[in-house]
Amino acid sequence: MAAFLLGAVLLVVQPQIVPSTPAINSKAETSQSVQRELLKKTSQKNDFKENIHSNGSCRQLPQTIIIGVRKGGTRALLEMLSLHPDIAAAETEVHFFDWEDHYRNGLQWYVNQMPFSYPHQITVEKTPAYFTSPKVPERVYNMNQSIRLLLILRDPSERVLSDYTQVFYNHLQKHKPYPSIEQFLIKDGELNVDYKAINRSLYYIHMQNWLKYFPLDHIHIVDGDKLIKDPFPEIEKVERFLKLSPQINASNFYFNKTKGFYCLRDSGRERCLHESKGRAHPQVDTWLLEKLHEYFHEPNKKFFELVGRTFDWH
Image 1: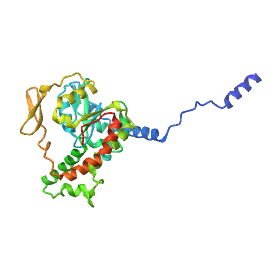
Image 2: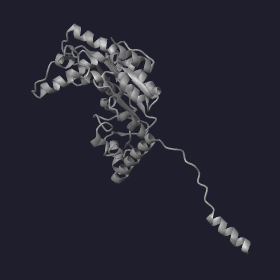
Image 3: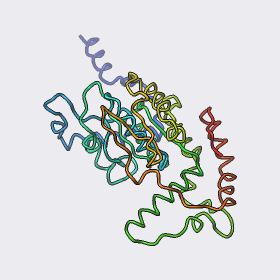
Image 4: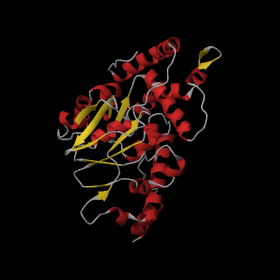
């Protein structure tokens, strides 16, 4: 009896063996805390029922995001991709991952911005500012590590001119004056490399940030210059990347001589991009264009090496 009592006492006081746990680095801790916070806000809203339609469709997180680039042709890409019956596209730019006010609303808010789709469809949203926003890659990764991303790029110099043109016309519509492009591109007689439009065209810098979180085979780069000139081959590549059945064909595109670019034909209905697309760029002196081309030469080379392919840029 004494031996039994002694054994019981020893069993109680013996320290318990606790399995060791791997150390979690601060980056992983941050990612997990962000995800927990998002899920917490999602559960607090408790409005999933609003995302289910009686016809069997529902709102869901996107399986594909067009992440950029601004003035690269993201709207054209989304409209062309929407020709496919298995694509459900968000109509407006959501800015969930790059705008703090939106991101704080949580994943359920994000879902609420998506279109209704059927189980066999891929939901797509496009926000071109994602590509150049430093916080976005990690936030997208926290949501879905296996998401497939679309990035459409143009000649960096042409993209700079398009960037300026958009802002210029925005001011013009509001009857507000806006400086000439030379005033932005030139500073103290040299190229103004601090101009935001130039920074957005340094593709290799922004791509490095995305490749910290996603392998290259999860990011399909669409050649925006080729998409303008001959859209069908580029859309075929996108279909293959998204593992879609080949439904879009050459007859879905026709060249509109009046507008000067390709428009879409879907089930007999013809539609073109908004009149704000395809605007003429401002006239820029040849020496200034050469400055731009020269400046982007080395960054372009670094980008080509980073992604393992080349583009027909200056």
